[in-house]
Length: 494
Image (cartoon, rainbow, N blue to C red):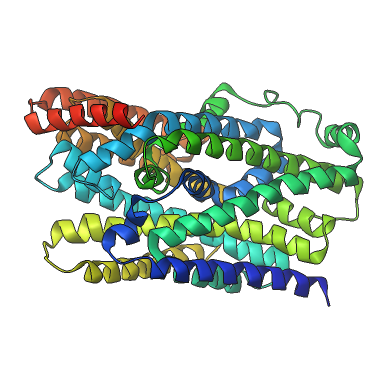
């Protein structure tokens, strides 16, 4: 049996497991809350790993190792910023959002939460939130599909477009039928696969490059500054990289997990599991890139065609073809976990926050679940069309979408949880200002090259939201009561 056949068998087994989980979740999904939020029934381990897998995507196994391989440890500032941001997100947002979304009319999406929290009768806030989610997530889903196409191209020599279609078909199938539960359960399994693979590749790879000392010496021969966090870095560049951490507060596909966990008490366990998983996985991704630099320097005959595929290439070199297939499945896991999470949130934005907000209907939950599934299909087709030309890098697509959500939603989520005087008008103007700033800044090369667009987007959103809220604040007994009830419930559950 050829090595490609071993690897293909591993990939087929992995995809079969994902489809089985989708079928299992389909059997447990009976209403719209089940489909969009899993009935608020997730345990800490599933919450933590599904949030991590949904967060990291193909960037963890392809984008980050590729950037480190090309430039060196100066690119690791992104990982540092993300770790800090993720920890603060679990600490500051998770417990309060879990309580507040329940207190405020049992909200099941971020736009519905903001509308209910701020008692916005105009529906403008909910519609604007839904549109922003729809636009930026379409780019985000597209980045995952690009990663899927590159995966099959580099692993099996398949045409990029064939790979894109295979990944899209499987992930659409289990997301469309199984909804949020399928996404969360598959993300949990995918998170475990990613974690093990990211530890094994650099650890075993060191045996091929001669251990730590020999590996470091080879890396310095390639570039004397490659192992330095500061040489070659600029102040603006470091700020831009660390600022990735600001994005966590506004990522709907991540913070929706906080709404779905069983109780506030379990957020502490989930935080520990999630941050532990994240730190070790990031070290594994960085280690993979550095071992790759040493290996390809020591083996002049070997050639790496695409820097973003260094993890895939090393896995195929190091392990038996079947184990290498499991390594390859880890890349698919990273890609598919994020696509599915983003599809379910985009579907909820289209149906729960746009369709139901604009078209008032007394349709049954069964009807809305059907529409949610159709929304998954439509968004997938649009994202595939964007991914088809394969012109953008994975990191570039992800960074733009990440900044969009961080700049538009981050300050508003934080203020909604901690500041009683936030108003619907302030949130709306801040959200729009943040989204526009990211969109404009990110598409002007001289600006985006100098400073990551999330920084001005986040700051402008924060300032506009705060100032407009102060100007438009009027006491509201219902808002005050919910704010107080949320604090009481938070203390009680802790």
